Length: 348
Image (cartoon, rainbow, N blue to C red):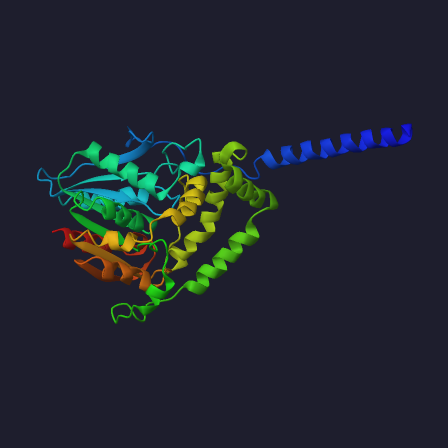
């Protein structure tokens, strides 16, 4: 009997030791964190009434007469403002535009939330509403890239009088996605565009295969518990390494891919996407309440189906759809000239 008790004692201690070793292994970073989260000289911060601390760069119009104030919404969810975004909109500002580029809460240089479940489409929309109050402009243009395009559309669905113009560049899918609705759209405007779905599928497979067991466990635990166990820095580092591969799907020519340097927001990405299921089913009807001019830019090599961009055109009553040649999902990377031209031509 004593032998059995002694054996059970040693077995229990062994199990406890294995669990301790497992958690030590789990919590030690896998790779060196190499994203850049150092604020720029131009970085400023808003402390919003929603509780969000938001990092932004303000680009003042290069001329005395301000035609409009532009607010740029980056992609993701979980993306960030990079130096290229700022450089491109420096060019736009020369034509009489004040421009604000900000990192959404949980992304880039903005603060992370203690409770990741608070990352929702509605929270991002509420933050944007507070930002518009901070700016105090009576002529605002929203430019939304990818997911930012859907966020801009979601916002104007509930605040149609707050925005003067809307520009959607490679806009993301409207949630909840209605696949039957997408299938019915037909147009000669965008037929024959380069389809890189196969490339995206291959990239997704490479991302899956390149992730270590520890990183996969981090994402599973993070999705279940939030950052109570897996820190933001660990989760963001995983997202950063994933983005190095996924950027090859953002361009026509993979020779134009640049190394990502900013800090993405993994929990912002995971939980904002989870919140899609709470978006009202009548969101498309609400979007129709925005009747001001809308420009939709679709890239020749964009990985999203062309029907996604066309759905926005069908919803907004005063919308124009333009196809940008020789460019991928991130249009300004490969065809900055046409990107800027179409934006200015629409605004002016």
